[in-house]
Image 1 (cartoon, rainbow, N blue to C red):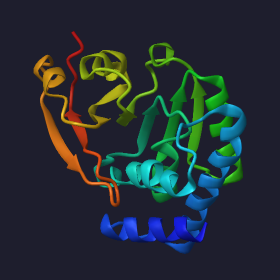
Image 2: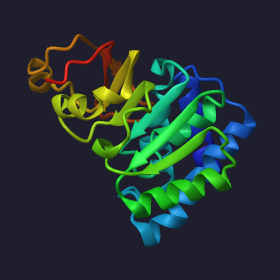
Image 3: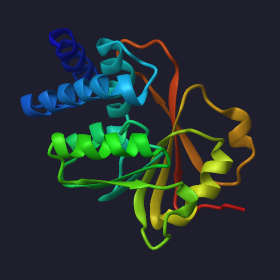
Length: 209
């Protein structure tokens, strides 16, 4: 795990994100948990520990500066990404991690317990079945659908001054042309990864029709 530690230290330095030894140890423990559970639960196609550090952890933490408010929902969290790495760095922010796959939510629940994260809870549900009385200041996801679809699924969960953050690969020009919402595109550079990344930030009252 020493190489993973170096990758994370150097990557976070490149991202200008300060990290304590405790946070680093917790991130490494999280990687080990993913590796352990991956064999039975097939949480992620990424099997190599160093690749997990780059593709999962640094990718998740690259969006840290753009999180707003105190109540965050990570929709389609899968193995707890980006929610768990973000929660490790934002201990005063409440995170709700949502996924419809029961194996993945069981893993996330176990990870929350083992990593002793007091600011994270998990919901096993499809996003459309979440009660709308739970409003969030930021809804984030590794974009699993088109921007239009994401807006229609999540707009009722975002408070009036909240934001939607969709993590995408290449700039989804066609998808953005089809929405009437105001948005900004934030280019994201992941240390040690050549892959193109961007964050679509949609602010304020969302138009879902």
